[in-house]
Image (cartoon, rainbow over all chains, first blue to last red; front, side):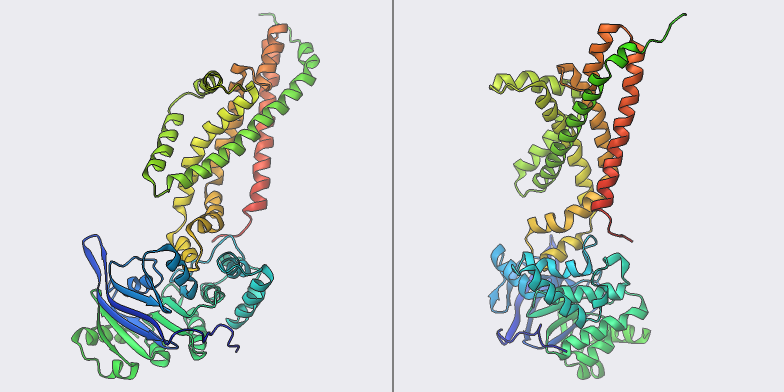
Length: 256
Length: 222
């Protein structure tokens, strides 16, 4: 595999969140969240539904505004100025639960749109980059098809390639396999594992604990909008410190 | 009742009637283009962060949709000269058709935009595109596709409303047929023929809409 998507011109501390708080009206969705993610680290974020894990990663590219604390991404303070927000978004790739491919564009066009319109690449450059990354997620033969003609697993791999076409410093995954049929989960996880092995900085919200064991440097467990526990996977699974973590692991691992 | 059909005045007037059909087409096509521009522009302003602009659009839509088209034509025809703008009947009719059709198009297109999942907007923003780019490049086409049947049936209605422009004697089918009718008193023959012409015009319009749909909205959806 090529190293094309991995960048080295970036600070050691890729993301720092300090004392981040977020409210929806009167409801506090995030409480005093502190996280540091170093270059090349893979973080798995888990927790019961409604625990704020999706909200947390959506704050990192400002799809959600936060009201308290600070978030730095790639050395930039993510405030509320449109300019910084755009700059941060160009450095942060995101993969969604529902894939969110653009239905009116072919796979190739999906991958070329933002590099051309947001980065100012020429069409030829963008196409070369797109084809290279589609090759990497093993879907290059589908480049001329439309999203609706692909399976869920294929769509999600295209979505990963589309995000990588921006050459991001960090990738956010928001439950990337939750909307997939079981037989398609593996192809997407394999793609993510390959990406992790190349050294991409990743934050993944997922319930795939096998994935967490295999690739995560740290597992962060959240409940009720706060971080409860944070540990390397071996420690996290064998010796969880908090009752809520034990209960969650009992439920999620018991099912599998 | 002893009425003998006589189509002679209609046949004599056929060249006039056929050119008048072109007039009707011109009014309809220009009106639709203007209505589409107003429709899309209105939707953009309707989402503006500036409250006054949003209310301007809402007010415009409410006024236009709750007043008769004939009155709107008269208003534009007789009000614009007071503002120093003197337009011929045909441009006036196009403006009136565009404004009227545009008000309906705003509501229809807005429904289409609202039907697009929030995830599409988020995916575009997450890729570093600006809001305006996301609207133009990602939202607009699927939104138009979603409401294309409603929009085109509104546009067929717009095509037929061109006949109302006969009230300010714009050059179109109804005003020309009225002239032939008042010269010949062959009311039945004239309006029978004109009815058939309008049917053909509507049918041609629908073929044009279908052509555009096949050309621009051909991508598959689940």
